[in-house]
Image 1: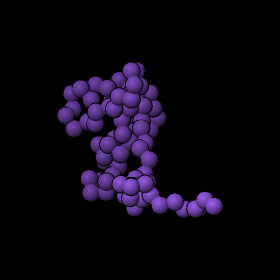
Image 2 (image 1 turned 135 degrees about the vertical axis):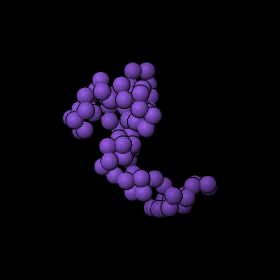
Image 3 (image 1 turned 180 degrees about the horizontal axis):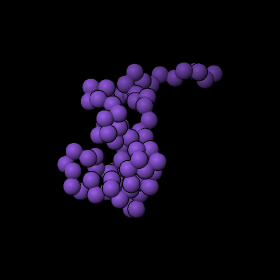
Image 4 (image 1 turned 60 degrees about the vertical axis):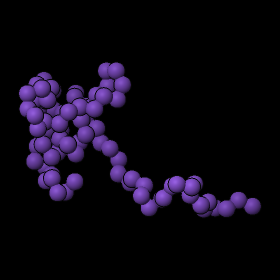
Length: 81
């Protein structure tokens, strides 16, 4: 008979599993969320040292972490993250 709740595989600790999802904002979606044009965000990425850098997922697919953009635009504070 199979056990319903098998023990974790050696080296796994279920208490330390990440339970949050990574929210990504693609360059084409930034205007609808933050009211900033795509071209402005891309320019800020080059000239403002505190503007978040995009993450490259594959060739031609990039985006920003939503939490990084929220922090930049003052929607969350540093200690909330």
